[in-house]
Amino acid sequence: MNILIVEDESRIAKRIERMTRDLFGNSLQSLTHINTLNEALAFIENNTLDLVLLDLNLNGDDGFDLLSTAVAESFHTIIISANKDQALAAFEYGVLDFVPKPFNQDRLEQAFNRVFTKEKSENDQTKLLAIKKRGRIQLIPIADLRYVKGAGSYTELYLTDGTTELHDKSLEKLEQLLLHTFERIHKSYLVKIDEIKEIKVSSGSKYTVVLKSGDLLPIGRTKYKDLKTKWV
Image 1 (cartoon, one colour):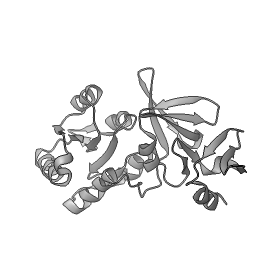
Image 2 (cartoon, rainbow, N blue to C red):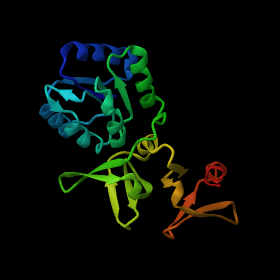
Image 3 (tube, rainbow, N blue to C red):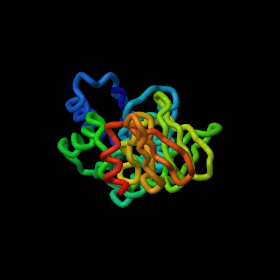
Image 4 (cartoon, rainbow, N blue to C red):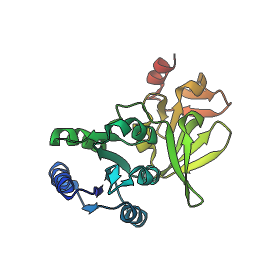
């Protein structure tokens, strides 16, 4: 694991660093602490990361300026902040967890467990997905998303207007964030349940989802019963 801590208070940063080392143990490959917004943005652009631990108040700079960039990347972001009133907005951007200050090791471990076990976020608040497009960050409303297709370490976002966008997060990471409105129907597909028009069963135990758009997507054999229960 390659982890970045973005925190302007040295005492708190050292505490987070100590707890992170204790909790990740031998799985930790690198741990970097940066205390300014611009340095953190440059570091993210030039380094491969698995997780960012971000404060929202960085010497007066707004952590959301970094968050909109961070959530478009391949890694997960966990907020560690005293600004509890911003938790909802942070979840809407697609963070994995929001750890309010003051915090203890148990609460931080709870957040890290979502990284370890690929546990889904308990908060069904994600309303936006940030993508990188032509050198800029573009926010796509979840309401405009029809389904998601895995494309190696990336994903393809299929939108209701018929266009397709590329996201740097893997299908597994997006599955963690899109908890209740989307269902994993296949190793390569996440589908918005409300977009399903019909489930077809063909000879040879082949299952297919028909979307309201007319798109046909395969259903994995192990996913059929669970999907049918949730859709009905």
